[in-house]
Length: 101
Image 1 (spheres, rainbow, N blue to C red):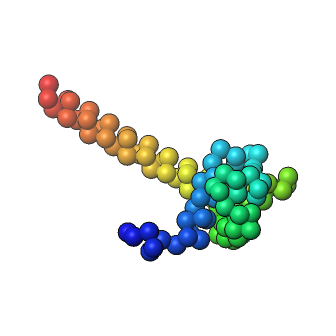
Image 2: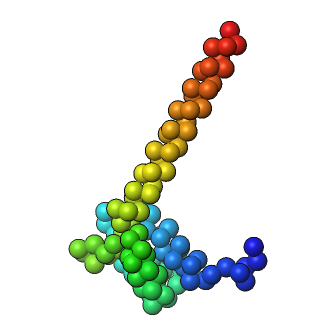
Image 3: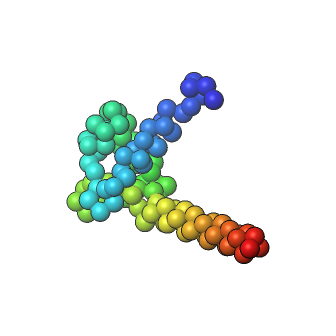
């Protein structure tokens, strides 16, 4: 895909979402996020508003921003899916090994 076909606002929103990694309990300020992703605080505010509206980010009681429970549920669903797939691979490998004896 050519760079000109990429949504700059979409990219910014995703950068904000990624910047919050590791700050689920403590959160980050708008300014901290802006510095991390080299964006203006105004643009970060817009991105945060979109992420909050979509349920992926919350504003903590301390005024900082963090991933929401919904975002963490997405991550947990991924982890569960990977575990199931690993279990299936293990089972297939055990069958192969048992039949090779």
